[in-house]
Image 1 (cartoon, rainbow, N blue to C red):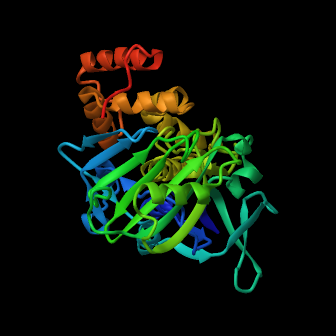
Image 2: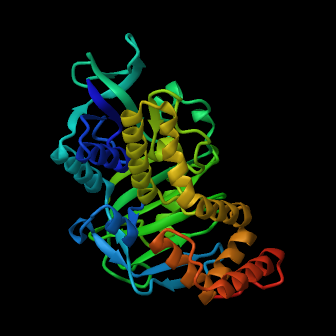
Length: 392
């Protein structure tokens, strides 16, 4: 009998498992293994601080972000007083799972099948990939950290199937030397309806390799062809392809994360990916941490209502940022004209500084209220067409 079974060994599940074990609980961590989520791999300094990630986990440090408009205009935004760390999920996820195992979590590989409750407490049933045999993990609580379209969520949590999804696809390529188009210290974000009519494309450096990909909510979009077109436009068509990966990514936190008795969701399963940017690693790890906190409270008190702490703690700190990012996506991603204006807005120094201060610290910076007022006015001017989108 485990205190908690964590289903899913990505950043969220591995973080939850490690936190629970270090707080004295018996934990089983169940993961399918072998699956690599498509991900640009960007992590902010706050993640490294909050979760004790050392620089040896980074493939490179990015110091500039380039925003590219549909017409090919671009704005280079320097990341002042810091950097964005880049990781490859192929290596980063196993590293996090290893930390959980070193802390004392028992590790199992297999596919989640269902939860049974023959004597009241949950029993997680999983299938061994090699033998196809079913095995049981009895416990007192379950954390579903098994990604978008979570099997745990679909089976246990009301309305878990109603979160909007972006389908993301990327290719890991062998990176070329620095040239006029590609810079190994720069992230390129491409806002172009020809690549993605409702999201964006990206070229993110990973040291000797790079992630090139895009996402869209529209099932009519050919993700592989769009990525091939992006590689051509970025001068990367002839680079060796090392891996290809695709997966759905949620863009709105679920209204409810628990089933009211013994199951709670975390990470992508709970929908905690930032709108507009699609950033997920930091929020997934925070989601794992608050799920572990809620389970600890519930196991200590016996009150199932304590499972609601996870969502309350997460939204207390991040709700406003998510709301602002969702508003930005709804305002600017709907047409190429809007995307052109968005890139023009990014040329503004106030926008640049506040954007990266918020990214690095994971909260809206309120130290300069006049800057916020100025940005609000500029935002309205760009949306209404009062400002011509002509920055380069």
